[in-house]
Image (cartoon, rainbow, N blue to C red; front, side):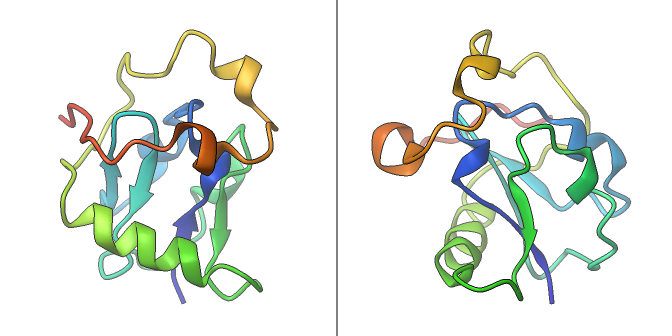
Length: 113
């Protein structure tokens, strides 16, 4: 099992999860984060820290797409180990919005550490 970041993170990217991760398995895209499933130790401390409720265990139904996306982009995007100023100013306006992947997803990398 591993945890995955879902589209609820897109345009929110609060980064509270990054602060608590003991193995630094988060990677930063332009408008979302992903978890490297090969680095995640399944501790689960990140899940309750996410204000957008974007982090779920991959064992939940329907998470295959997100597991693949997290694995793919964690190999391309820079590692991020601490909360930075990359949370969008309008993050709260997008919290809970449906269909964010189709509307806003960007494959571009973030800044990382």
